[in-house]
Length: 382
Image 1 (cartoon, helix red, strand yellow):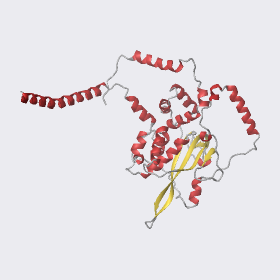
Image 2 (image 1 turned 45 degrees about the vertical axis):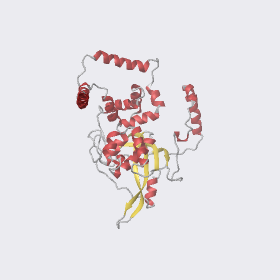
Image 3 (image 1 turned 90 degrees about the vertical axis):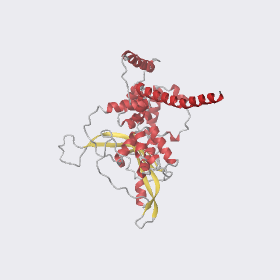
Image 4 (image 1 turned 135 degrees about the vertical axis):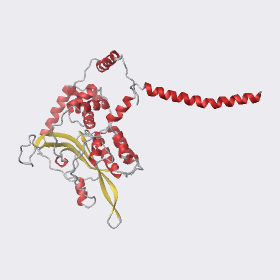
């Protein structure tokens, strides 16, 4: 595309930046980053997921700077992420070791370990709570004190047991084929551009970094008939998983040992779809297939949508856009799509002048035959 340099606009740009700050603080009130971190959990989790950077404080700062715009906050956080050195690679995180805070299944009423509702708006009335208009720090402190008293009256539960996966039950019943382990080195889309056909690791990375609304919309398109039957939530988990690294100095003789460096909160969704499996004799039988979703924080809708798109992309039927890798993976990225829309505001003087010339030429060419025909009619009338 053709661009021209814009000169002499430094002062105007500086004044524009001042106006941004004015709009943010014109009411004389400044949002505290700690309050954003404490009260905007859902937005922070979304920003961290789309930015591929797990840091709640930095996500809160990005939200403040972006004045609440998720796209701009993701742009800021990804830009900062690109400046950070990568010092270590963690070991593979196993969600079976998750310290579960919420765990539900839409496939079975009774599952080993039970349904754990946890924190969710799914069971609320979705009505505006006008009491929040007048909520104070003192109100929050009193409520927390009362809640702590309720927890103190409960028996000590100890560490929660490791919960069986619903998928394991289906495999045991012979209703689902056990997925084969794939221990190949995963690709890193943040360091090397995605290639097609995309590997499974590339697809999952792009999906978990994808813009939440776009991922959800495309998954909805899948359900409406673009290539898959109605999926079921086999299991949805929200909880914290431990992150470990190998000996940073490489001096640990025990290769099995590792160093625990912390934990991250994630949402995991395992989506079940029925599909026909071809047997050795050529016959077919029904079985269950899985679509997998995993993202930072409590981000349940996105994790479910990610699982649906994961399964859809594995089918690879070119008749459906939701199974086209390039169509889906290139268009769900927040920074890519928002950046291209924003670039349209940049000067396009040269290209538009070219378009105008083309339009003028077309109009001139189209007008000439009409003028000649009119002239011939006038001559005949004489």
